Image (tube, rainbow, N blue to C red; front, side, top):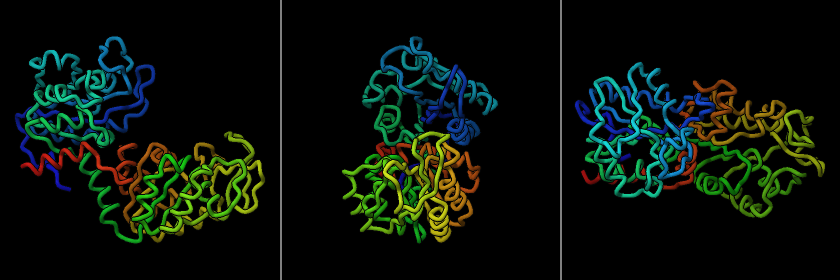
Length: 394
């Protein structure tokens, strides 16, 4: 892809402003999961090792824009600064007056300054040019490394990249884009997409785009129920979208979408519900489909075995409940043993990967939920587009 990469720039002695996605869950002042922080470490270490003055900015949660952080401390990045200091083994100072006192920003060699939550800055979400210029004035080089926010045209992701003296992609963002480009634009075939989730409507554009690209499309969860209905099966009281049955039928004409032959059902949606395996053509009116059955899981796994490129977004069933996790686990393990290129993204998908312990076996795991989906559905990501534009300008 045609954008400048951080590794191509001499960063020694330069003020380098890096936009990361450090939006982690925090409960009682403690970080619940630091995966996103750890994902940013190679980029930060690269800048530190190059002798740059390292400034980092990120958002956290949804604070009220324009209101001081002192009045909404639950959105402060202080816990993130503390964790970064531990993981980087260096001083990480949290700075809250970087807009009112930019002259006070001076990172010592080998240290990092983390700018307080950008979402409290008035104009951030609407990509205000004046705010973007204030960000740009803080640096000699702007590094966009937050793939998880690349689908948002905001002052800290898009505006600053337009106005900074130099704008480039960080290693994390670049690796995400390289992996997606490889899987969608230059895939080895045959190619498979696995799309799960509750509703067809929430992933309609994703399904429509993938249907034109893949050789096989496996659907799971509530999405699969709508396709089952389109294939003429009764789905009992399972979650499905009758108004989208014609859409599902049309998609089935575009690419191969295998249907389950058996499913795991229950009468109630609960972790302790009694699970029963039934043929897909023999459901009662009060049955709820909560997973694919063992015969279907095996058949789908055999499809996975023959693929050279796999895109995975969404579980095959309610994997959070042990009685309905077997389908997702079977497919996850098939992906893990596949020798082709696999890319997975989305919160539930990553949770399933963690649960079944296959992280090391997936070729690439995306850190961006919404951005991953928008890229897969064919949407141009504003933060990437501006980097490409800046590169084309020389």
